[in-house]
Length: 113
Image 1 (tube, rainbow, N blue to C red):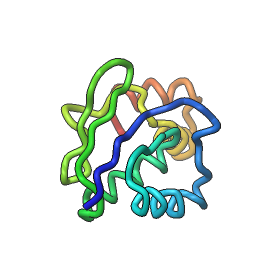
Image 2 (cartoon, rainbow, N blue to C red):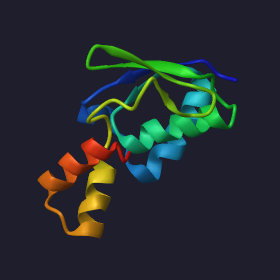
Image 3 (cartoon, one colour):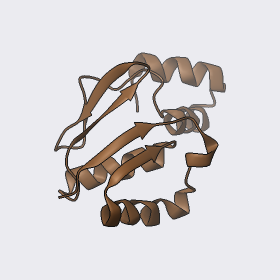
């Protein structure tokens, strides 16, 4: 089981295209060390790796607060408000017809991430 240090970033330079995320993840397994995470797909791939026992549970800092990803792949103590939730907002807007703004407000109130 690899130990990974996770840094959340908003840099486009750190973003990995969805079709390349598995390759990015496999490289992290080979090298260990630092995972700079800029997209929800990248973050969720790490959560899957924890759940499957490939990497150790990890923590990350978001907006100055520490969060943990446990062996079940869940974020504790709670999912951070506004954290990599763009996909849920898009899906809510697509499925309901809500505006992006309304879908974002509803998503945050429901924590549907």
